[in-house]
Image (tube, rainbow, N blue to C red):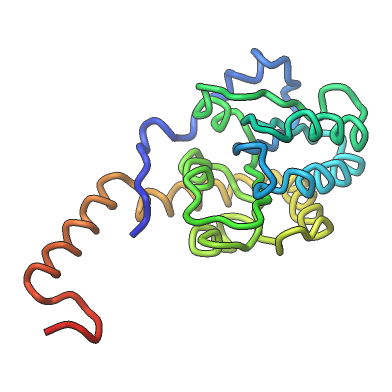
Length: 213
């Protein structure tokens, strides 16, 4: 059973936060949200983004989150992509829904995941996803919602990121499909209904499996 999200809070909407951050209107904004820890593999994220950004000048990356690797990652970002403003570390933020609404795509490069609430929130916000094909990500992200790559595969991540950055129509189509997918299966109401059904079947002895009576 999927986790449920508040689809009123995480929803497509105006990109007002771009003015606050001083971002140009024509920027293709990639957003990454997660703790700055080894399992999130921000090193591959930075390498893939820097390679794509060298070929696509509209790309800008926002990294939301904090953690023990922040200093190392900021230094790595400055080395890989020295142009000021192309990679921005925003730290811990309370306005993630607004940041999602103002972005063009969501980027996640984890080495392992369970069920990613961050991806679910991005999809609910109408964003296409570029992520690693680990854990529950393939269940969440179909080919109509985004692009998956093997963990630590910087070239595959770069290609996925570059492809979406250069195709705004495809980004928008994937974003619409992602929102519709979450509306069907990822709302709070859908989660409650699924748990209610599971409990009722268990109590009635209709729970599937070899131990059913």
